[in-house]
Amino acid sequence: MLGLIGLMFLSVDPQVQYTVDEVMESPEEFSSDEVNIRGIVKNQSIDNSSSTFILQGSDSQIQVSFAMIAVPDGFEEGRMIAVNGNLIQEGDNWKIEANEIQTGCPSKYETE
Image (cartoon, rainbow, N blue to C red; front, side):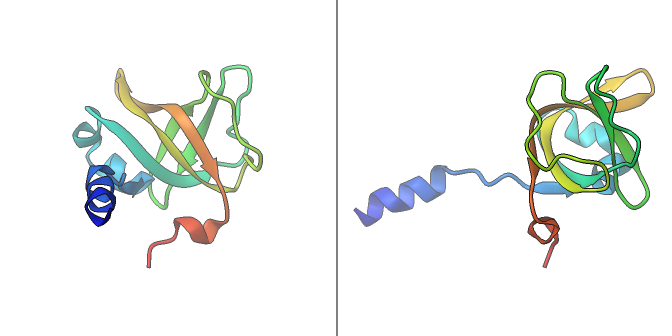
């Protein structure tokens, strides 16, 4: 039984969560895989007609498309959220195509 539990933990690949600033320092490094990124939904940036918003960090920001998913309760401007999705380049700009958006208590996303 302990062996099965051990194998279960070994097979779970924990996903690292990055800040907007960490990703935008060198976005090319994150473009090949799915990325989990946290930041604040920029005020007055939610555009429901294009299903996009801006996720901001301390120094950087990135556009997020949520066209393919439903947004969770608590999704609003000025709130800390986590976005799981694919980082893609469009011209000179980078954008995340969201697969999942998580809202929750801001302390959930703070590092220790």
